[in-house]
Image 1: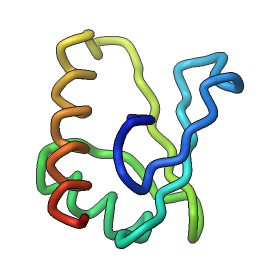
Image 2 (image 1 turned 90 degrees about the horizontal axis):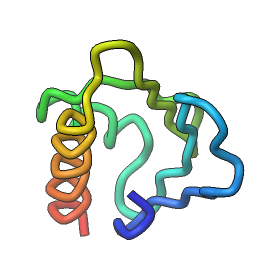
Image 3 (image 1 turned 60 degrees about the vertical axis):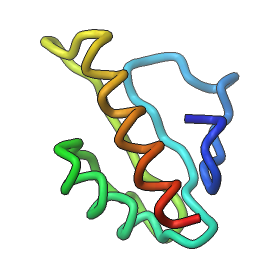
Image 4 (image 1 turned 90 degrees about the vertical axis):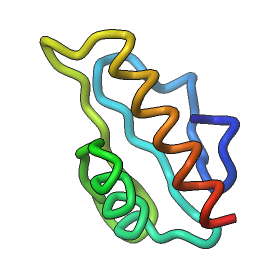
Length: 79
């Protein structure tokens, strides 16, 4: 995710299965969440700059790759 345009993520603060990061550029967090939902990836906007993603039991490494691929498509369209 850190390599995608408009995504700002501090890898040093990640300590759990909860990922909070900033979305900027041409997409608001709400737009990013809505576009990702159309790709089948569900998560929440926290406020006007941040989103929150959580993995849980049953989420496999392959599922993470699906989410990252979807984020690539969504951010590329918005660029």
